[in-house]
Picture 1 (cartoon, one colour):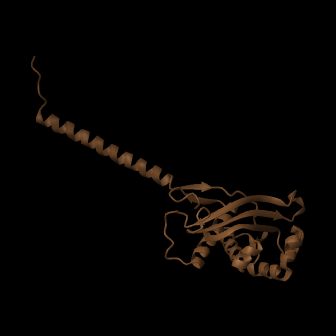
Picture 2: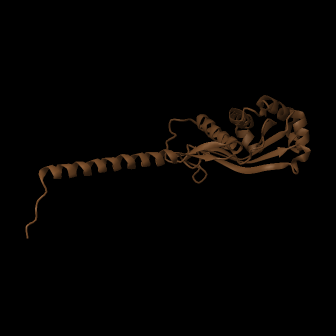
Length: 224
């Protein structure tokens, strides 16, 4: 049986068509891959509590005596950092100046801890109290104390003084910040003061994010 061979011209045309289709598929596939990669670079995260609005908020930080002995200004540091991130991302809210909160705590001593939400709000001229109770604040890894890694862990409670709040605690959670977030990253070039500063900043941002919508990178560490 005789089988005819395709002409050289027909072969070239067929090869060109195949190459064109292949190139188109590569381009389309590349676009789809790029689309999905871009789509998954960030995800939208909704605020866990989104009712602050334009109300006035004061950030109060509690720490036990051993933590204060180690760092007498730890409450001010965290108050200032959390207030900054809240104000930056909730421009409509009225944040009480950290200096006013510090003044109350210094004048009242430990007495402020026993004041009701309404009493605190009256003294600080605010509607909401964001109380942060420190559980950990250290530059040593929790599972290996000889290793250096910043850790700040705290319970976070939002109290509402308005009569229609129903109950004083309107939101509560626990926040843990580690720095550096990547466990393998070196901190040899940082002293303890710098390491603690970065950890506090990371903690403050994680805490503030509970109250506003934001984007979270899927490429970064889970803590980010």
